[in-house]
Length: 303
Image: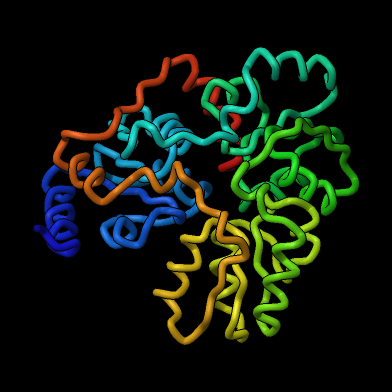
């Protein structure tokens, strides 16, 4: 039986031999992080996809992330580490439904959370991530915004940009939406000295009680730079593990044990190994017209 470290060493050797850049989302497991060339949230991965010098990009994440990488690097081969790794939020709205919504709100800029399909992005004016959304929506000239698909992130933005009018659909992350105010009460009682850091994909009843609400990278940076020693983490529980590895002098607790993205967990170290060998994953192929139209709203985000 091969040890994890032995398999990791083979992956590192193979990725160099086969000119593969491994991009891993922050929610991937620690063993995958240790072989990645770059780790980050959706915004960071979007930018890194453009500048990676390798001819092949292996996206350890979910489908919309691999699609974004392909759109930004059309001349590169982009592989999704596990073909079944999707995102329920990205599939909550169809192009046909969005076209009808645009008719209802003709004066609105259509702002898409990056957790959307490439086809949906073709009908949008601006793409944002949780890290870039606040500054991005402040800058757009339109006073009305149709924000899709996450109404929780959208409401969090609307509270901070009161000069604009927001319209939403009833969409969002089914994992983060499971976290409740009762979870906050229980965690505060159990860890009375800990700061609460949450992702804005959580419901308003959760973010309103947080000491900090922001993107995955924002949560990590806050915990790293804070003088506090204990933190309750209100996002995917993988972040608890990663922070524990990085800062053993501090303590990190999950806000809710249910906050685990099953799609992110589909990718295993063996999947990564098979992909760098050229025997696994799925190459992302998008129609040229889809890539061209979807890129417009992504470029608007990247500036």
